[in-house]
Amino acid sequence: MDQKQRAEKDLEKLDRIIIEFKKLKLDSKYPEVLEWAQNYATDAKHYFEKGDYFTSFGAANYAYGFIDCVLVIEKKIQETSFLSLDEQVHQEG
Image (cartoon, rainbow, N blue to C red):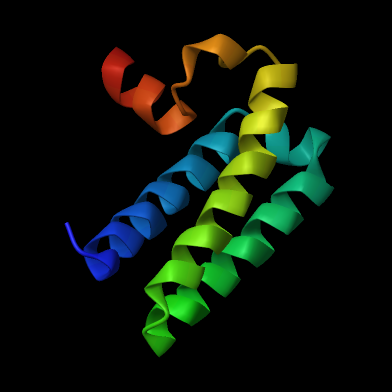
């Protein structure tokens, strides 16, 4: 998988994770976290469109970090599982 494919895959995954975050109604409890994650998602998409796939990947991972932190605090994922919400949703579904 090249950088472009990897960045594109991460952007799609990030969109799904943000949707799941909202479905769990964590957006109302943690609106600032969602705002930061969405800002990084916007940055990731911007860099992807410019062809800077490395920076796009990095920005997407910052967004994941914000969301994963809340999921750990809320016990929606276990910190030691190393599975993101997206991976857990797909395993359960």
